[in-house]
Image (cartoon, rainbow, N blue to C red; front, side):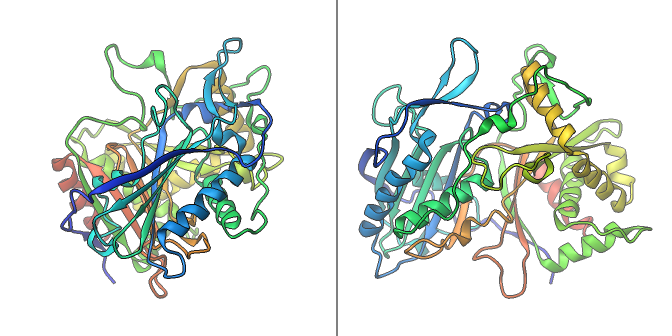
Length: 447
C-alpha cells in the first residue's frame, strides 16, 4: 500500500457554464434588524471561501426540482442564520468590523454545463475551471452590494449537479459551516433543524482590559512588515506561477509515520500531528536552503473544547486559532522525525484557555494577522461529504483552487473511506522548482 501522487489528469479547461437565472433570496419571515459583533478571530478572516459540492444524478430529484427545494431551504435558513443575509459594516463609533443583520439577502444562481459530470475530470484534482461552479459575490445583483453568501446550482447533462457556495469567512469556520449544511439539508427535507446554532460571538470577545500573557511568534503586527513588503500573511494570494498537485497517503502510510514518531518513547502521536510534521519538513526544505533560517508552521485548531467553560459545539462563527511550531531548517533536515512530531504536539498542547484568550487579546491591542511559512488546514474530518440531503450525499466536496502557496489542504479520499482505508489527499501549490523538490522530499522522508 504505497503512497501516490496523482499525476495531473487531462483537465477540462472550460466546463461551458451558462448562467440561467440570477436572483436574491430573502428570509422567509421578517428578522430583527441588529448588529452582530465580530470577534478578533472573525475580523482577521475577511475574505471569501469558495466550495463546490458535487452530486450524482437522482431520477427522483432532477436539478430543477433540487433548485426549487434548495432555494426554499435557503430562505428558511436566513431566518435562523440572519447574519448570512446581512452585510459587513465598519462601525463608525467603535471602528470595528461587524455584520449589519439587515435582511438584504443572499445570492442565488441557477446555471447549466454542456458536459456530463463524468466528463468534467477527476473531482479530486484541483481544477481552476471549477471556479465557474461558484459565483463571485461582489456587485452580485446591484452595484456595490456584496452578499455574504451566494449559492449556485449548476446542472450537468447527465442529471447530476454541483452546488457551489461563496461565503465570507467572517460568517463561519469549517465546523460551523458543516452545521449550517446539516441544517440546510434538514430544512430542504422539511425536518427540524439538526442543531440549534449559538450566535453569541461575545463568547470570544477580548478581555477588558486585554491581557497578552504570552509571546506570540505566530502573529505579526502590520507595522513590523519590512518597508515596501506586499506580504499579508499566509492567507494572501501570490502572483507567482504555481503547480498544483495532489499527494495521497494511505492509512498504512499514516500508521508508518506514527511508528516513526515513537522514537525512543512509546508516546502515541495523532495522525494529524505526524502528517503535519511530515508536511512541515517537506515544505521548509523545498525552499532555497538556509540552515539557519527559522521555519514556523501554523495549523488550525478548534478552540471550542479548550476554553473554560468550553464553547458550545453549536457555536456559529470562527472558533479556530493557529497553533504553531518553530525550528531552524537544519533541525528539520537532521532531527529525528519523533522530535519534529513532539514540536507539533507541544504546539497543540500550548493552546490552553489562557493561551487562546491571550491570542484574542493580542488582536485587540495590535493590527496584525497569523504569520508563518506554511499553514496546514485540515478538511479531513469536517464531514461535508456526510451531509444527508433529500437528494443524497455529495460525491465529493472541494474548495475552488486559490493561488496561495503557503496553505496546504488535507482532505478525505474521494467518496470518503475506500473500503477499510481511511487515507487522505493533500493539495499542495508551489512554484515548479519547489514543487519538484517537495515531491522528492515527500517520498524520501516516508522511507
